[in-house]
Length: 91
Image (cartoon, rainbow, N blue to C red; front, top):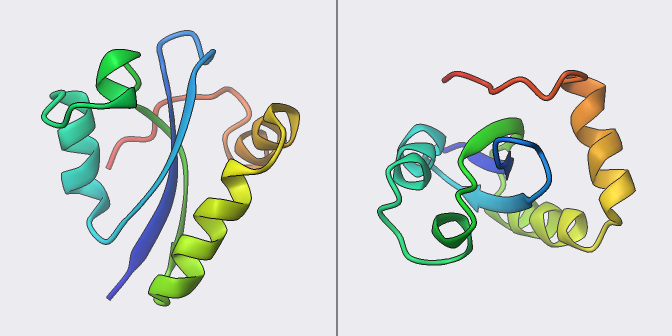
């Protein structure tokens, strides 16, 4: 099974959310359609700009925690390595 660590942002890339899931398509759908109350619904965060894949659930959770502790500058750098224009990634 694959696990995904992902980064979402809002329309102007000012708000950032980091999450982990075992079904990225379903989870992005939930964010886009505001099906779950919380941060992403409140701040309209649903633009997928980055994700990583692993087959190890513990590694995915560990990586999510690591990224959440990074500075905003370092998170921006990570996104820009794979997605320099912060384009929405279509699944």
